[in-house]
Length: 612
Ligand code: G6P
Image (cartoon, rainbow, N blue to C red):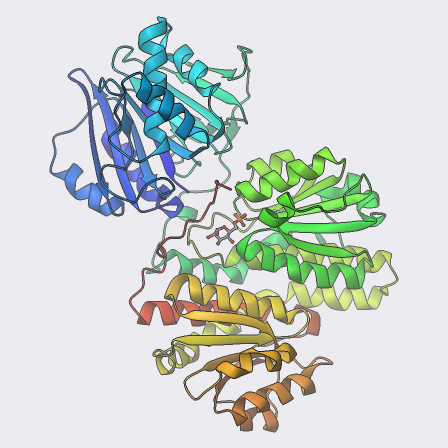
């Protein structure tokens, strides 16, 4: 949701910014731009389209300088045009800004500025902010950083910004409220970015800005203070935890495929040090101080968005079965504005890959006001949700760059299985049952390898269903959310319309859609619903639908009614959702590639959604 990067130091900022923008492109790719400050003044290049469009212009220009800012946009206010691209400038052309977020009161501020004679070139809220800063700077005689601070105190909304001014050409000013910013500290040079990925090539030392903080950065040093008052904040630098290889595609054509393959080890990584095979239980250090409070909760709300919400639905099934606590799963954006029943005996579990999703963050803030215990299940270490929750469990899947979430989803499920195992053992699950589940989880990596080995067969199914305009995904119980996730993956990256439905509910509506052109993906494990699902398959077959069955065991009946069967090895029925979600990721991937879609940059989507 917009990526921002800035540099100040002795090197040429241009290549640093351009490489940084490519790393941040997963956050938005509607348009991109850079602004550079050098001894001749400031200059910018910006262009609608993705970063490679900007790159062509930058390659043809002699632009260089030691201070610069860059932006890749996911449009909110105004279409993705050259004019609306960032950086934006004030009317004097001296002050440049890049912005991630939304200035909610931009219309009021714009009216006031227009009354003073200001003219606007773009439709963006960001141009209003830079003109406001300019108005304060040039009329109040303040230092630039003070003018930024005064302006930000008039703003309602969310922002991560980086700005510079020609009149004070030795500094960058950055600020954060609602959109993440990381400051990278090098030797007499600084980097600032929406996340650490543009920084890791240059330094591993970083400081995460917290909500309401601003930084004034020069070659000589940096100073962090609160935007609301002048309190200086001394922050300790931490080390970036991931390696450069983890954020490069390597030999894979797409990040998504790389990340699907990584599940061979990421699920095991999530369990590392947390599974006790001898006792058939789990240990989760991040929540151990709060485990009794979770166990004694009157209810649990799981709140999340997108794929993480689907993980939450699997979590509901697991926790209700094993912890025997009522669990409600809520879209964070709905939860936030609903009337949920929350008190100090309520536990809120927020699931988020990025740990930055604005709706999820707002939901936990609201729950905290009611005194609930908040638990984060996040992938990005040090992210806002990870820091703002009372306790939490990292998923340790490594950086996920592909916009469509894959390995982060299975890592989230893994954490939920670990919680379920822990609570199950507390609630009467026998040691031998616990050991069986723990062993099945530990063996998952071998099963993932087998699914990967089946990729060609899945690609063949993709070839044969390539022309379909609609897909239906059906599953029951814990596999209904897997159906939803399979449908979401397909929609996101191939733009084929797809719906996930509880298999038995199909006859109350979606069955009307079925004809000989409709592929229907069934999740059919041999659990207690197998025969019912088989009947549903037959109902679709009778209406000439194309049947793709994902199962842990072929039977004659299944073979008879299925057009295609995707075999998934499963040693424990409970872990079927975990393993079965992977062929659905592969199916969506192959369909998207065959249809010529940009898998890693699906239209209109962003990986990290930091606006509500
Ligand atoms: C965006 C992404 C999805 C993701 C959702 C929630 O919509 O495109 O892939 O599932 O945000 O993100 P989170 O980081 O909170 O899991």
